[in-house]
Length: 462
Image 1 (cartoon, rainbow, N blue to C red):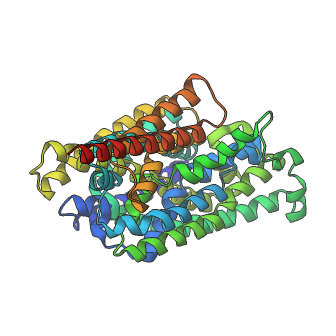
Image 2: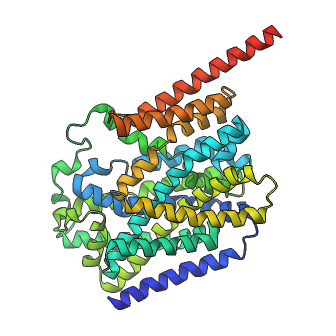
Image 3: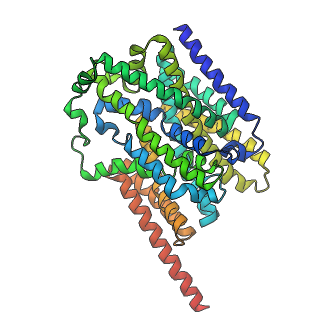
């Protein structure tokens, strides 16, 4: 076990070396937060794919499917693949063409300063929760390799990830994404072959899947709750700063669109692996009750030690990339859209220092959330739905039409937050996320019509 820990430590040193290399190319906040806008199509595509194919997919989804069948993680792989494709087609090119650094920059440009601050305040907690989910995945992986309690490894990986992000910024994350994606894909193929062989061959593996595992509908689930379960991954993540930062880091708007489409295709292809592990694993004798440790334990038993170390290291890199992106998202929104409004004359160097300090703060907040979290997949669902309704409605309408103003965006953000809070945590309403989207849409439209009528009345009176 000691040499396995040493091998994982070697992976960590490689990651930190990449971060140190990337730090030499960082002169200001734009370099740190959007990689200096120098990313090509393959860099954007692979990086977006790697960011989304993190702990919640590889480990969280496998564990959820092993326990509950397809109904436990029905968003994989179609939901998030559709999300990436829609984001590429609807928002990537338009946002990159404007030269923004964060999503909240769009709200400032289109709706005004108060909408910018509100959008940032809604987005930051989402990134923190997303980071917490990845920290849990990373801690579970290291716990399996090192044989240490998850609570101990959670603190250790939080310090490591925060330091890595602090040094290298988005560029280090993108370089790591390209390297680890290839290794993860090879590891997944080898692991699937090993699992099928362990199950007695392809026919026996398929035969071990119980019919109830293939049911998309959870017991007692209504059609509204079912629709809501698909809407959260498809619609909720379109406005994620982690995704948008990759688009904004591309060289051109066209590259942003093509990179997003490439990411969606890759996700659709590779996302079937966790689905297979979750369906075949329990029938092949692996403990579905292991929770988020299900996949690491499966890999540890099936793979030769040397291959397991490589696989664990690549999986470590994959999760590291995702949590790094979430911390950068929180730090970027806080720096560019809150700190910069207080320090209006701050130069790029000052904002870089602020972004790095706020990265550390974001890491601490994510750790606190992770210590109180439930499962990886549960945290991801919270992150995908928390406050995203108002952001989504305002972004899509504001980006593609001239309908609505500052009050419209503010009303949509407020209505979306109130609706998801009431629907999810107070009254447990089926279809709470869809309810929040409808509430945000109604609030946006009502405010737009009301302010439009007042404006016309003022012009007539003048």
